[in-house]
Amino acid sequence: MIWLSLVGFLCAGLSAAYIIRWAGGRTAAYSDSMPQRFHVGEIPRLGGVAVLVGLCSSWMLGVWQTRAGDPGSLRLGYWVFLWMVALLPAALGGITEDITQRLSVRYRLLLTLVSGGLAVWLLELNVPRLGLPWLDAMLRREPWLGMGIVLLAIAGLPHAFNIIDGYNGLAGMVALIVTLALAHVCLQVGDRALASLLVCMAAATVGFLVWNYPRGMLFAGDGGAYIWGVVIALASLSLVQRNVEVSPWFPMLLLIYPVWETLFSIYRKLVRGVSPGMADALHFHQLIYRRIVRRVFHEDEARRMLKRNNRTSPYLWAFTMLTVVPAVLFWNNTPVLIAFCGLFGATYVAAYIGIVRFKVPDWMRF
Image (tube, rainbow, N blue to C red; front, side, top):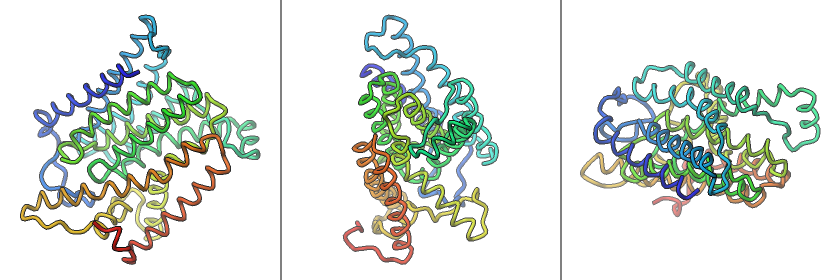
């Protein structure tokens, strides 16, 4: 597993270096009018390509090692290629948008739905239980409901990661934290095959983060967000389906930050009469950038914006850890996990309202 992670890290890191040095200037420029733009200059948005190269390289090496005798007892068979097939529609859709800036949200959503459909068909993914007796009985009677949840999760989570991908290291570090938490529980229940896929994902993400934080030399783009979303969704669903001792609310609590950010964003846009697909600058991380992170005084505008950008992400990393820690501690306790999900929702809304009304303690500003 260590060898696979090393290959994933090196392939992702070297691919990222190549993109920055030679390939970055061949993509469409990111408009200055975009509300998500918080940087100066043209930064390549092809970090997803680097992550995909590192991920697929390490996964294929794992399959080869299994065929050669499986020294690590990982049991990575040809089913790993089915994971790649399910991943590719969403990943290629995101990368295409990063290159051309012309693929609409509708088509990207369709491609993530294709990835979900392939997961249901090729990987036979389903949600057999939700940890509540009446819902579990319904899923047993109507198995198509579980398939619908799979489609919703795989189509929705990539876009949730795309929403929180706004500052250097933010989405990448959240993906890294969640991936390692999932891998930890996989090892707890003895699922080494699934854990190895997740460790490879974590290693490829670190290879990207070397160039993304704090210098901001490469952005993940839609491709990176979609890769993280699909792989984490596949792993979460597989973990619950293959291991009955794992509560289905464990991955829900792990991912509550991007999921709740997405749901709350849809709600506030509908209330204002705006399309949920319309980009804006009112997400939680954007409010932290504007109203909590103190202004940085520097003569160079690019350096000033970069420093404020880098100071924003740690707030959200800490916010994520508030859900990851209890999720890892109580991964098999459904009532406790549900309670923490509710607590996070209330805390998020209270914090959002407090920031909007400028009610932020001085000790939180730096």
